[in-house]
Amino acid sequence: MFQIIKKFTSKIWKSIFRKRDNLKIGFYGPPNAGKTSLANKICKDWTGEDIGQVSAIPHETRNVQIKEQVKIEHNGKELTFKIIDTPGIATKIDYENFLKFGMKRGSAKKRAKQATQGIIEAIQWLDDMDAVIVVLDATQNPYSQVNITIIGNLVARKIPVLIAANKTDLKHADIKKVESAFPEYSVVGISAKEGHNMEEFYESLFTLAKKI
Amino acid sequence: MIKKKKLKGLSLHVIPFAEVETLGISERVKKLLNLVLGNKIVILHGRLRAEEEARLIEDTMAMVDHIKNFKGIELAVIEPDLRDRGVFVKMKYGLSKKLVGDNSALTVIGPAAVIKDIKKDPKKLELWLS
Image 1 (cartoon, rainbow over the protein chains, first blue to last red):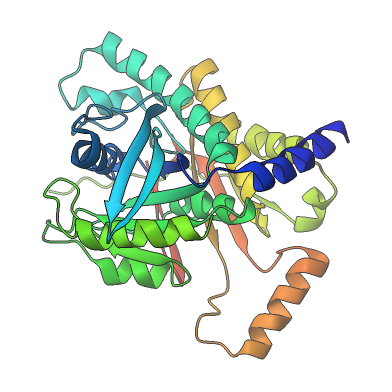
Image 2: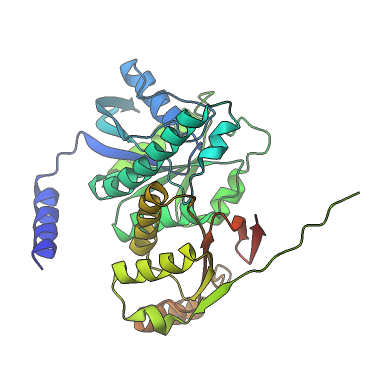
């Protein structure tokens, strides 16, 4: 009962005193979808610095990474965001998968342990977000339960969502399939790596910010 | 010559929605994970709420960390595809979901050591075994 009252009071407090700047934007999605690549692209564009390291090995991001005061200008408007890059959410972690990338057994086991903790951390951060960009790999099947669970949780918490269908530079990218899987949400096709379609992405980001 | 692997056996555990309906989030997740830890594939008549699915992932990750040889779970939900259906059908479905819970869906949860992958599109579910 106390928890419910506490949550309700905090919600009211937040809605009255919420600043329209330093909006907390979370980057969520499955591993290797390009969350950090996109967060890096944004941070590099507007602060000149990266937020984290990227790698072809899944679960490179194993801790929540934050970049404060990222000021973005678009069409004469300016907004300041707090960018929060989260570890990829998965339902299974097998250290043996990391061995395929040439990792030693000890390092692979350590990475797996950190990855499990990272997933728990990412889920626990959900409540703190003002809005979320769900980053999906447009070359993969979008109907995975992890994607549906992430979006379902954001809807349940009334957190505005934008879906970034990433990796459009790759041959098998299929934005239409992502759009058809999530017809109720805005989907923007991008390549964070190549910087394709970032103008439309920033347009969508500002539209998302209006929903907060 | 192609070697044929024999399927040694598969244990499916079907849970009617009524069996978990009255349980709280912790008990519901615990019940499902206990079955999965026993190497069973659980078929739940109905679906978990979004926050229960998130809790299921959180508790699974905690277990991967603490239970030897447990690699996690595969999870999929299949629901009636209402995208091309009329407003009345959608309303009827939404109302019954609110009144008696979402028991028109099927949730499949299995140990990652047994289920290699679940391929899903809106209309079908394919289980690939390890």
